[in-house]
Image (cartoon, rainbow, N blue to C red; front, side, top):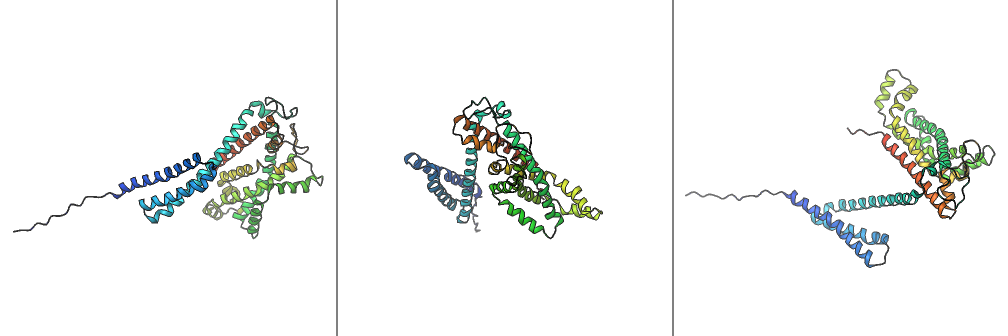
Length: 353
């Protein structure tokens, strides 16, 4: 008589399938429950939406994320879930604020935008003149002139500072970096006051595009220098060593190897520096003043700029003037957007090995 032992049949298990469904269900709860609570308080109470979001929605969402993650993935993943909720919430807030600003400026500025608005000046315009007459052309030209002068001064100094820190490695490299970092914290109005005291009040120069450009240069220099420094650090050291081994001088290595290699990044640094200052109003109020006509002489007489244009018309109190200010703000926002898009396109790409 032989005994046969029956082997138990073991069914294969696929825990990841059930876990995937569980995670999807948990993620749904993390979204649905807080939104339902928010809607309940929003429609049944008189509390403002921002207060409901901060005091009720966000704590409820964190609590739901912690509980659902505990049952779905275990307590070791609770911290990751809470961090993910906070990250997504912060990103959503930033995106909502940016979208709100863009929508507000576009909605209020579009009625003023037309071809004549971009080409005409305001020499015969009063605060109540219809929007079909006058424009921001003279201010746009003045802004470009001031930015160009500021770039002429700040770009060579910024690139030279970056080269001294990264390639020359002089004994004063740390001091130069400290000065550049300190200049990053200089308020814009202080830069305008410096130019006002040093050039305008001393009768060395009057209100002009040159004075505004010098104030802009003070503000642009830290951005150009720091960004150029980081870009120059991306140039492989092997290229410098190879050129030096072939007998090239340090100056030739910098001019023929380092700068051409970092050209796209340096252009990006210049664009970011321009975008940093193009909307500053305080230094221009103290250095360029304002005018309703077109001034083609950058060395003499006040010149109009878009930031001062917005400040002037927004404070008049008349509806048409306020619409002109919103139109100028939209033009300025488009210019800044174009600059950031160019910086993004020209930014050097890091190669991942």
